[in-house]
Structures are given as structure tokens and as C-alpha cells.
Image (cartoon, rainbow, N blue to C red; front, side, top):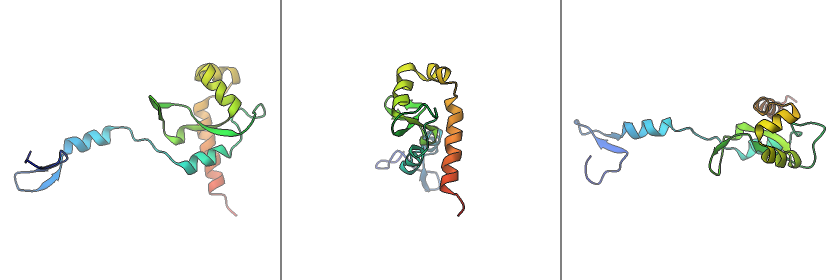
Length: 123
């Protein structure tokens, strides 16, 4: 690599300065997280996914983790009231799902469908 050039740039034999394809491939291979405050707000407007047994305001609960203190993609959220949100963290996802007879992954798609219906409803 030429002196003074960044890691992402190289000069090829023809004198063309272009991107380092290895770095680009590494960047593209990393999973990207999608975050949207508007989407989370829309999810919070939905009723708790537990239904009639809910209590208090609804939050957009991320059902997976992106890693240590990293939220997963916002489209992997479900609407859940504070009481049930605390409970899913206390019990763990598997026990919570068994206790309430729900599949949180399925609830993602139901929430997405409702957000789309509310966002694009015809007048």
C-alpha cells in the first residue's frame, strides 16, 4: 500500500485508486441493525401482545439481543405492557412463552402487520 493512503484505498497497477475490496467484503459480511424511532413508537401504540391480561403502558420489547448492551433490529420488537415486559425478563423468553401460550417470533409478524395497516390505511 502507498504511504499516506488510508486502509480503504489502494492504487492498482494502472494507477487507479480504489477501495480495498477485502475491507468492503468484511463490512458487508457484518450484520446490520435497523433502528427506527418511528417504528418503535408505532409498536408502542399497539395493545399488549398478551391481550386482556395486560397492565399499564406498552413498550416495544426487543425479543432478541444484538449482543452485550446492543439492541437487535427494531423490526424484532413486540408490543408488551410494563408488567409483562418485566416478567419476560424475569422468567426468560422460553418460560414466558410457555406460561402465556404465545410465540414471540410470531408476535413480531403480527405487530409488523398491524403497524403497516395503521401506517398505510386507506381513507
